[in-house]
Image (cartoon, rainbow, N blue to C red):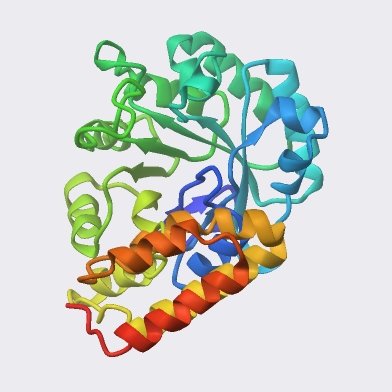
Length: 331
């Protein structure tokens, strides 16, 4: 049965690309879409920045038609500002609005935004209600299990957010205090899904970095779909690999060195067009380690890739890698 957010059909078991700061930009989203991701989220957009018309925040509203279904994700601590932000985002015509109640970064949480709001659940519910009222688009939420081990109230919180009108929830299986350490606890995500009062889609997030992990989460926890973040960085093939494995039980062959180099160059080229020569080079660096993971004797190339300043230099290094490792086969 197809999963839906509002009237938007997402398929039987959708795979969502998580919103990640300086990662989930249009160049990377394009590669993930091409390789099987079903739902896109923008990088999270600061409500304060958007209201101030800050260039970086405004640019994050941009997306392409082929990315649909797509959500614009917003964060902030002030309810009035978040309502205004919602109205601005609506003019960009995304498919839905997603509220970030999950970001664990200190500069966000210290103001009570992102997962910082998990310390004030009544405000979280009030803010959500006002955002739902401010737009005709479906509203969804991304959050965590709680602030710390003593406040994992996600079953109750998810129900209350549903009651004020959200149409889907994505849950990262860690508390804010854990950041990204330890293992994600999917049992509480399953408790949300299995709550008989819940009728909206529940998506799980955390530690899905292989087709086998995705299958285990799907079968063990009964969620409606999976949101993938770090597992996709520098490896957008993960979406098609998961789909193939869920359908056939067989693993797809790993992308060849030629395929990796082609995709890496395509990624860099799009980033240069999108962000210019400086940011285009800098913000693609975080992907190189995963594009070329597990290759022996690769350290010198990796260092050169992440320290090169000029686009031409990066392309030259990639061509050298092709000459040196073109025949390398990935297990």
